[in-house]
Image (cartoon, rainbow, N blue to C red; front, top):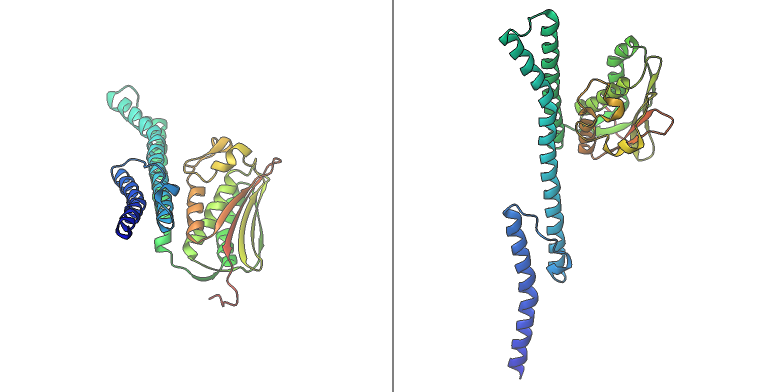
Length: 292
């Protein structure tokens, strides 16, 4: 009876262990073959097997999300590059076939499209660099106020030329960050703000800190972002209704988001119904650190 009982217990125990492992093996093979496996969840088994199944589900979901992002990026890039390439091809074919004359206006139009194509490629390179920034950040203690002031000094003349006032409210805010990447964040936010601010308006640059966090804020007096578009504002190539009449590729804010998150920070948009947009970057504050 003891031997029989041991055999029954062994049989049941083996089934409890083998079935979840078989499900996990099948899910791994499906994932390897390029298919999306069914979530294992509690079906993976009790105890640590269940935790393993949950971890596998999370990994599979992350891989599927990354693959979807890759496909979306390829589609977006193809769509954005198609228009300038089509214009260049049609214009050059018309010149070659003698349909149109190589007038200064025609050549200038082709030149503008080539510049637009070059800007897109440069922006894509910048985005790729930002996405890899977490692997190449050179972080050390810096004062975010100094980075912001330097960026404002460099861009203020351009603001003045188009009749937009650049205001500052900058106080010390020590952080551990890559100074070049953070300068890129400030430059992109200020450049984005001035694009949507009409002549006579203003852009406010704020650097402040509380007990735990350092904040970089850029606010403009432009038309703001429609509520339906705010969730997409940091997506690649997204322009929105107000952006259709503004030069750009829709990559600048995506670059900012990648760089901020590479610094373990976060960025959010505040755009009330009355108009105007405020971008708020939050980073961890360094305390009792001497900024060199």
